[in-house]
View 1 (spheres, helix red, strand yellow):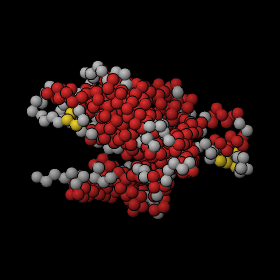
View 2: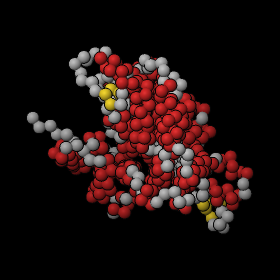
View 3: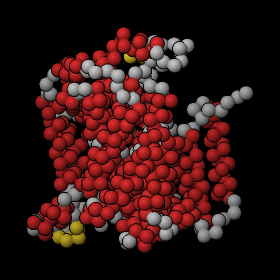
View 4: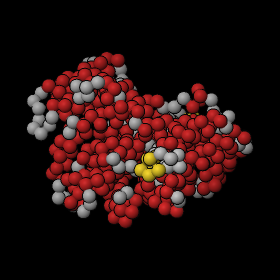
Length: 537
């Protein structure tokens, strides 16, 4: 019997042909009532891209590049230039700048030093050792991509675990597992088959989950955040600032991260080890081996810190601008008035995308990075982001988004807001388990924005405020898929390390998915009642 796997050449062809057939059926079949012809074609394009994203037949970025081709072929856009506009969205350049800054941090091992310092300070007990890894990972993930953070933290966690578990402890644990016939090997004192001890499982799962959760904290922490910001700007003309997002994202991180740690280390995988002094010593030794940060590294640290501070300050215009002369307020924070340059209207030099882009020549001017080092970033994510924006713009422009939203969520009209949020969160988490969180956010964010007007009366908000509220809820949920290795790159990386079984990830992930659905629903509702009215509208 021949098995078609999307990752194999034959399976890829079969999956592609099936996606094309499904696309043709949707595109040329009967036109649904209330949906325009162009909307039908945009919907067919979404089916094509979604099918390939979910199956993984093509790399995500390759599928994204097919979107403007299909949109133009179907005539959704009259020419290719219009279909490619999404690839020039200003938030794409924020991610470019963020990735380049991250490259500078990694070149001088600044991210690694931060992680090792936290480990050496906090890791005084087994549970605190796991917590220190999670805190370090979450903090770095706010500024460096989730994938890069996990790739850097996993070897550190494995090295520290080797000091905690030890060869003798691993062999003893391995001989006590239920499957007595399983083969057990070791690598650096850590079992690589069935002999996994609780502290190993808790630390590796904690690393992956912390990377995903930490990305919620800032606008550049994970692509779904920027996808949402772009769609709010495109569809509603609504701008979410860097500081505004942190006021939303940071409480989510600060509250959910300790809960995840508690569940892992107290409920599911309580450490069986009491002494972790060797692990702390190992972290201190790693840190000592890094040596002092050189002059170029210090310059990178200064530029990064200044960039992060300016990102925050740029979002404090409501507090700072009134104290400044009008011209300076317009120049720094943007507005329709006259700037110090003597022209009407200004973006504002503290606009977070401008600040991010300005940091790149600053790195070159400080003699810290060469162009080939800056350019070595995750262009695939950039292309995926651009293709997602192009697709979402097409769905919105043709009315397909509103048609889908009314069809899917119309039955919830008049339902209690807590139920609406719970359905949104659970749906997004489920979808993210099957495809990337960026692809999920690309599909779901425009839908949630479109149904804002439907639930505005239920929420007691304006149409815009309701759209922002629902879309933010769904976007945050896209970072909380914990059950499957394919759900997020952090999950895939720790699973691929060989020190973790899928059943262990499933056990923790299913419980946390359900628990986080309830917690996020309540937390988002509380933020909506007491924080967001002052922040977002």
